[in-house]
Structures are given as structure tokens and as C-alpha cells.
Image (cartoon, rainbow, N blue to C red; front, side):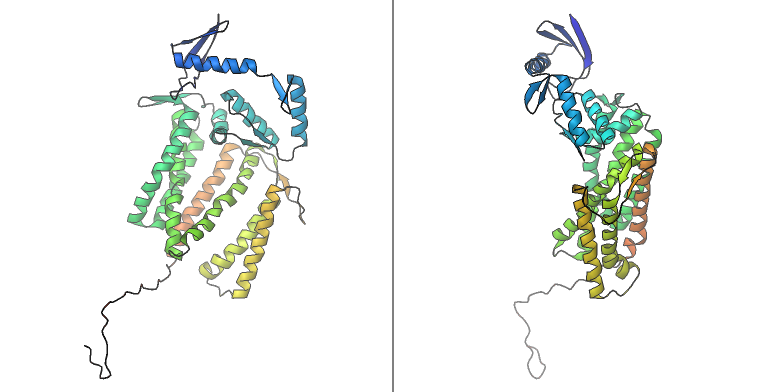
Length: 381
């Protein structure tokens, strides 16, 4: 009789992680006993027995042939995408993330994208499988961190809205971004402690979630209710722009070469648009003519558009090259950059946004059903 475990059972929502499996022929028995879990493991074994060892273009193949074909595809791919891990184990997911890191590839599958954010860091600090207990809940640190992050990120949104109503939006942004920077600093210094890893990764999301409460309101403050949805939609594109810059962090952590052409174009185009709309007329108080404003804006728009095209088609032509090997700075260096961005945002909120004057709104016209009529002599009746 073969024994396997302890393993995690996904037969129900409890996800028991202390299950031992005893197998004798085709019979499975779980300790502690659970008929639902035994049925789930039996189905998994049956599916595995019916499935071929590997497939190539949908046809059964031996493992060596499949690996050879996979190596050919990966060698020829410009930007490989690894997917199809819906039934993968945790070890499979780790191997996939490690392979993607070596290839500079993307990973796409339900749940694995979330795991890929914190999982490599937890593994490096050797806390991913350390159990963390809170009240009656005991989970591995990485699983606890991912669950707490999503919960805190949702709860903090009404909280920051409430704080903003009492002390003002700009001051709230300063506090939130400052707390996020502090949480990241403590996280990278105490990540080897599993409890600290869970708590301060959650507090990082606690500070970040305020943007979903304050930015829409701030947009309405400055630009009014008319076109408020379109204005905020334009503002929210900053998140997409930031996602283009995120791979730089991965390259810094691993010390790999990175092509900066798209980022250079995006930064130049964005800088021209921000200067024309905000820095020139508002911060510096410059009188920018309509013609100069439109010229700078459309040049910036063209640069941003071509930068986005370059992220999708990395082989597109540019008149310059910008591929450099970045120094390996590890997690501490990458998160130090994040701290700098948070502190910069806090300073801008307090010293720039707080001093900006809200536009004066035209008072609403009221309708009087019984207006007073003035006669030629100036007497009202």
C-alpha cells in the first residue's frame, strides 16, 4: 500500500492541506476520512490514466518528442506566452513561473497571474509554505497573503472615502501614499517573517486602494460633472501606461537585458501632453497659445500611439536603439523604486494638488413660476 502526503485536497471549498492518501490498486483512502475528497482524488487519477503522456498539435506523443517540439517553439518565439495550467499543482505553477522568468515570457491562467505577483518573492524569502494562523484560520503564508490582499484592497476604498470627507482629498492622498511607502519598506525588510509578509503585503494594498475612491471624486472637483465619466476614463489610462513600465522591474530583479524603445516613446509623448495641459499653464504659469498647445499634444499623442504599437509588435522600426542590460538589484532594489514613486505621489498631492484652485462653477439658474414684472415707472407689482 502506497502512501502520499500530506497534500492539499480541492474536493471542496475547505482546501484541507493535511490530507494523507493511501492507495491500494485502484482503491483510494484518505486520512482523515472524507468521502468527498476520496471521490475527487479518484476522478483525478482516472483522468490522468486516460490522458496521453503528452500531445503535439492535439495528437498523442511521447514525452521526448513533446519536449523537443516545445523547445523549438520557445526558441523561435519573440514573446512567448505560457498557458494551460488549469489543473496544475503548486509545484507545476512554480516551475512555469520560473521558466517564464528565464524566457522573459508572459504567464496566463486563472489564478496563476495572481500567484505570480507574490509567489516568487515568498519563495525567495522561504515563507511561501510556512503556516500562518489568525483566529481560527490557518493557511500557508502565500495563500493567506493573496486572500488578505484582496480583502483589504476592497475594504479600504470606503475607508479612504470617509477620511477624505473629513480632511480633504489631497491630504488623504498624501497619507495613503505615505503609508504605502512605509508598508513596502517594512515588507522588504521583514519579508523573511511569514506573519510580517502577510500583514505588510496587505497594508501595501490598503494604501493603494485609495485611488479608486479619491481619483474619480478629484476628477469631478476639477472638471465638473459634465463628461465626468469620460474624464475619469482618460485619467484611468494611467494604469495601463504604468503596466507598460512594470516589466522594467522584472528585468531589474533578474539583471536581464531590456528594450526601452517603447518606454522612451511613451515617456516622451506623455511628457509633452502633461506639459501642454498641466505643467506649463498650471504649475509654471506659462501662457501657452492654442496653436502651441495643440501641436505639443498631437506630437505627444503620436509618440504614445507608436509606443503602444511597439509593445505589441516589438520588431517595429524606430530611428534609435535602446536595449540595455540592467543591473541585478533584487527585490529590495525593485521595491525601493516603488517607494520612491509613492513618496513622489505623496509630495505632489500635498504641495501641488492642494494648492491648485478649483474652477469656479457657474451658479445654477432657478426657475420662478411667478416672476416679478417691472413697469416703466420702476414700481414692482
